[in-house]
Image 1: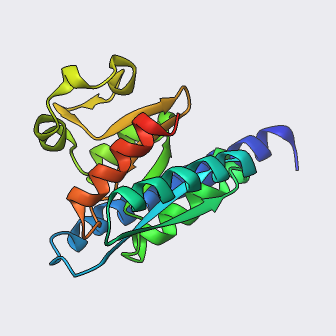
Image 2 (image 1 turned 180 degrees about the vertical axis):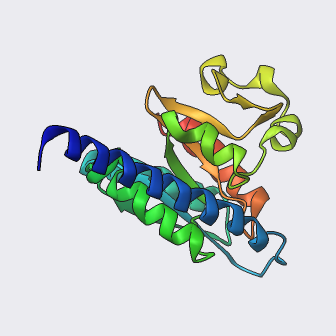
Length: 187
């Protein structure tokens, strides 16, 4: 296969992945608004090495201790690249969203954060930020570049990662508390 054929095939594959992701994300919004249950379990999906996983799991245990009745399950997936520039983590995330089984709180790649926000896959955090004392109570670095079409759908973790909440969460208030804890206490 010539170089130009490989480039064309890769570009075509990327377009198919993005189109499928758009469809999946649009369909995922239908899972919102379920009633709360007694005893809350939140799923936190991350990528990273063993150190990152251990750090986040320690922060999750501290969150559980401070919030009796809330359990946090940390789901760690390697961030290795697969074809088309999508990581194994993001591929798994797209499948979970399509299956109406997205994690409550998750890492997202910063370069595609806006895409997920625009497709309606993320919770607008502005009401939670206001309830928590407003933007001025958060470090400016957490909000840098997070505004999408008048809303804030994530907090900055680092140059390549954003913390977000899925619209599929059954426990948005608890998910916000976890996201805020991880974003401000697990750095």
